[in-house]
Length: 445
Ligand code: ARG
Image 1: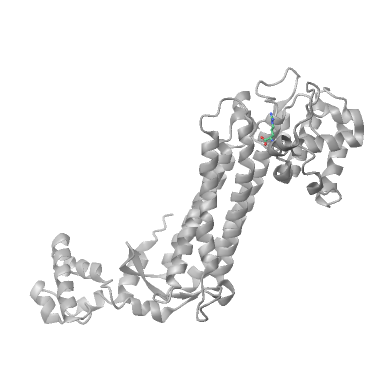
Image 2: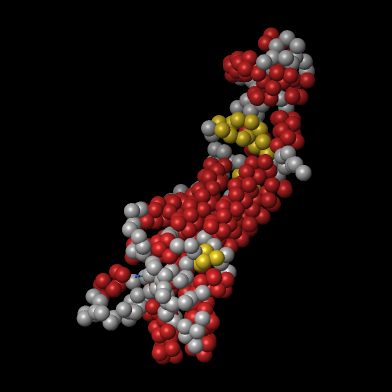
């Protein structure tokens, strides 16, 4: 069933109809669609474009339809193949219930402004949902931070051991990263905080509508400024997809680290059995599938962003059906990212840190070399020179197969005359960490 039969002599071709339809996926927007229609009908009544009685009848029945769908009295799946999209379905259902009055709902409205509104309402809700999930993840990370102040681990650059740090300091990176993601989501929400309803097909309407009122009812800051832009704009969808892309990118970096740290050779951490899987052939295996999937699923989310960019590229103004492609991409990206956030949170909370193994890892790799150079600086050697001297000492240590801690004081004196026993305290791993920790976080009032 379509909304536009009048001008047509032929019924739509069944295959073309199925190709064209979006009901099978945009049925997910039923709440937003009804919410928008209720605000629209309220305004039509207030402005006497329809009577208050008609508006009330429409609103009452829209609410009933919403309830019937959410309680599964109406099963939306049953109507796949019968309706073009969620907008036409809700309208048809309303007309079925209240006849000609239902036919008045679409006065001064187009599906173009309607669908832009539905997507804004939907994304707004999902921004809150995603932020709440991220807060949950940050809580899990905070737990790790609070309990691992004395869990030492090498920090890496270029995947080479660089300097000693703690798990707390390392995981604090993730906390800050996700907090930034939350802020970014709310920036997106603020920018899309304008109500497109009233833009009609692209050119507004001759009816004396009240856009401010509708905008207020739907808790937007104000109506959109330009009609044509209101129905052509999918920037807010793209921006949201970019925010999800970054979240997923951040998750993938942590997932990768978990995979590496959980590997046989690293063994810095152990993922709980519940979050690993076995092999069908090799009995000894435990595989970090969950972390790998979080890493892998980032491809889908990045793909959604680039797909929609390509769909929107060079698209003429105003609305074109191409834009219907935004739905499945967005729905999939939202579901994927939120699943990944939740799984990461669950898995992280069970991870065990192998403190001994990480401490052991700090014994080779000369992770205290920078501290040795800094010590020489304190003894009056210019830093660039100190850097060179430490490089030479490391070459010497490699020959002798010893660490900087084992290198004898008399030998050190050959490079820098005025060093003393204090050198060994300066380069002690624990000291290297503690020295920095004090300065790592500078709180300003
Ligand atoms: N299903 C359509 C979409 O998602 C709704 C808007 C249809 N508008 C139109 N002029 N055909 O974009």
